[in-house]
Image 1 (cartoon, rainbow, N blue to C red):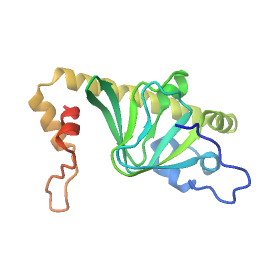
Image 2 (cartoon, helix red, strand yellow):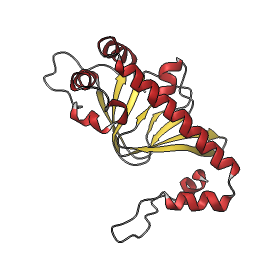
Image 3 (cartoon, rainbow, N blue to C red):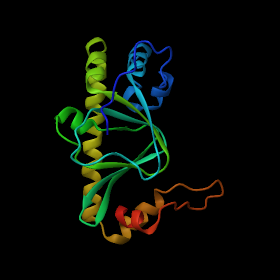
Length: 193
């Protein structure tokens, strides 16, 4: 993955709009000027289903924002990939290595055609210098991610398979008539359990 690069100053419009950042819980507490500053520095990337955004161990270059589609965060364990979590539009990814200064702890793969915005570390620092509440939003996002991972780990290790299966089925989308939509093949389904 090539490093995220800020948009060139000569560009007339940013591909990522400030209004599109409103869908992110992370940026809701920020004012319009902070969202505009972030959008001006964002890089738009499109991924095919099955394409990696990054692999575990790769160097982090910034924060990734899922604008459309779904991204699976995976840990490779030999022949198996274990799903850590799946995120859709409005999710931010890559907070842990962004602050930890280490490589990504897990791989990220597009589960469907996906569009992501990327904001590199230096751009985030520049925006934080003029909008310090961004730092608090990022810390809150990171704290939420840790809490969710601990809860997920607890439920996966402490709950019987029947409970995990029921929880997975109940978390899946439904059609307008209420029918369950199972879009996964058996392997991704197995990875969730």
